Image (cartoon, rainbow, N blue to C red):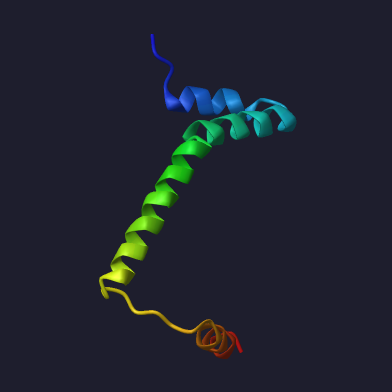
Length: 75
């Protein structure tokens, strides 16, 4: 019979703090994409953004202007 989420949660709560931390780490790792997939996704995103810029579909701003605006907004 499959163990329910609630049962697993209750069992995890009685673990020592160190073991709960290890379990949390393992669970989080299981949700992450492999680094190669992340790098491929970023490479695709970069290509799409550059192509949109080359087609004139996006607007560019000078870095100095962006940083000046950020400083203004955080004061």
